[in-house]
Image 1 (cartoon, rainbow over the protein chains, first blue to last red):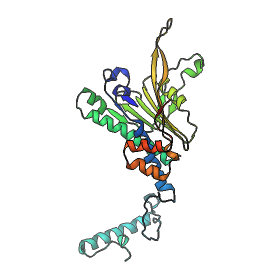
Image 2 (image 1 turned 135 degrees about the vertical axis):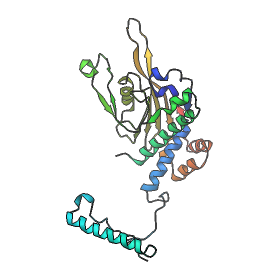
Image 3 (image 1 turned 30 degrees about the horizontal axis):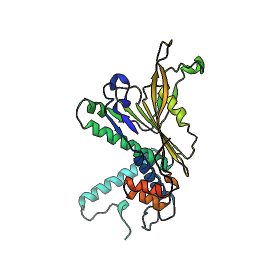
Image 4 (image 1 turned 45 degrees about the vertical axis):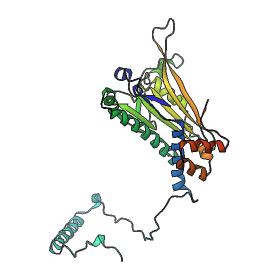
Length: 106
Length: 193
């Protein structure tokens, strides 16, 4: 399948570029189709063609429900206090301090 | 809802076109500058608003603006329409590729110069078509007549019916290997219509 450079715009601006072209072979298209099908199988089948998944065992926690637009004024004040406490402690003890949200269970 | 096969295939094909344009752009000459100004418009909407003065449709239909969202498209920065459009139909999703190609070409007054249509069929042959505008001069006609011409229509080896092993083979080996794989299954792939 051959595309000419002049195919990519109206005659007025593409005039003179008819001789420059490139082609995409049908074999290449068939290869794209095969790759697309492999990707489908990797995610949608249970057979050996299924893609690799994480084996990590986890317990899931949903995100806490405090998006910015739902914050009440008293919450904002509370979070501001907490933030400044965190900043102070982090400054005081840079190396040992671990932010509460980042702690991982050992 | 787009299927993974539809989306991955479309992306692979669009990327191939983009890569080829990039190679031309790297030449640094006038053609390179032209190629560098062509952008990948993906599925963005196109308003086709050129007059289609076909008597059979009547005046009421002639100036309707038609909105289309193709599967892929490439547009030069200084042009009003994309020059190349991709339409991919997967598993009889009801897309009439020929009708779509005709809309793109006639309703852009021939500014859409190549419509690549790929009809992927599960369990049957898949077809690749390329439609282009064609201009005909007829005696007694004041203007040239714009028509739609199907330039290529090829059937691609029925890859989707292949076993998993065949598919792995296809991606693992060369083009020659792909042809052999198709031959072995008694369905030689690339057959001009």
